[in-house]
Image 1: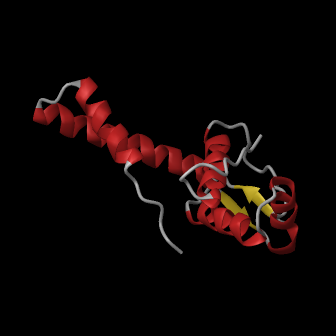
Image 2: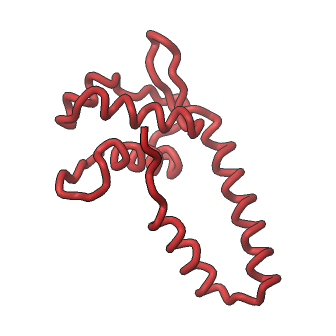
Image 3: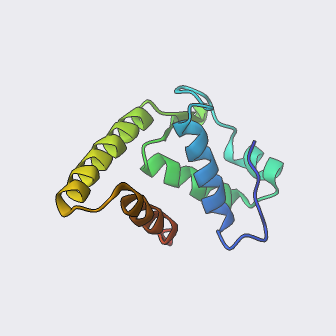
Length: 123
């Protein structure tokens, strides 16, 4: 279930993109799942078509979905590659942290700060 919080400082397209990405990453949306059309999802969520389109483009750029022309948009197997890339990056980060002598708690705080201070791309 997707919920858009109109009072949130996070733009609706980013809320949608993040929620769909989360559902893909936690496998709630399995590889091969057909997503609703942009128009249908926009109508269901009370969003502009361009807002949903922007979220879908972000998911496609991240390799989480693929658009197959008139057949629609589907959860991509490339999402698994993204998960593996994230796992490798985390392992590299863990090596750097260990080399610097930073404890686990501080290392996690560093990652949380980096994730929460991320600025969504404009466009």
